[in-house]
Image 1 (cartoon, helix red, strand yellow):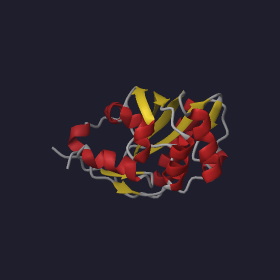
Image 2 (spheres, rainbow, N blue to C red; image 1 turned 135 degrees about the vertical axis):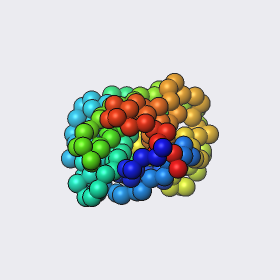
Image 3 (cartoon, helix red, strand yellow; image 1 turned 90 degrees about the vertical axis):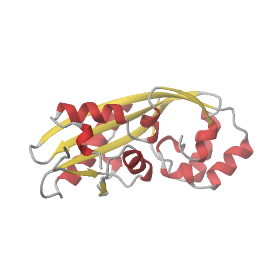
Image 4 (cartoon, rainbow, N blue to C red; image 1 turned 30 degrees about the vertical axis):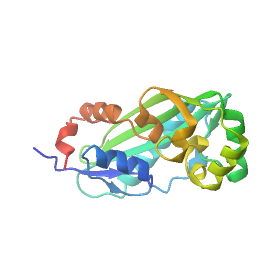
Amino acid sequence: MTSSHRVILASASPARYKLLHDAGITAEKIVSGVDESVVQHTDPARTAGMLAALKAQAVAAQVTGPALVIGCDSVLAFDGEILGKPADAAEATRRWQKMRGRSGVLHTGHSVIDTATGRHALQGARTIVHFAQVSDAEIDAYVATGEPLHVAGAFTIDGRGGAFVERIEGDHGTVIGLSLPLLRKLLTSLGHDLTTLWS
């Protein structure tokens, strides 16, 4: 049995899209256009959740017909700060100089809206990330690739940055930007079986 609902990812993230695709879920991508600076909160879990919800809501408002809209957002909690995407290469470099050899907590908010019923499920996931003791030369080389400029916390685990993450405590999908086990739970709470979304 397959679902009659479209699956829409409210994100431009190729990593999130690939996660869904590799899990057998064909999703459409619609960028929310949400200005992330509108959410100013001191709690990283709430920040990620609020942004995820705003993105899902913005895209759900554009959709006609039954759809499952998935919104996600990630922030890194490090040294009492909430770190989203770095503003520029200099900021990415400064962050890595602070983060190397230390650890932070990556929070990813997940929001799912069923446009057919208007029901909404929201929950966050957190994973502890332990960073390698990288050299200044490695930081410069990594920042020069441009990769850390486009992601929360200025690092990825599924790209070049994966070599600079010693280990994680939690679901690796959370660090990539979407936890499949959590997505399954949210879909179940809305009355949908994830297996019906397999293509």
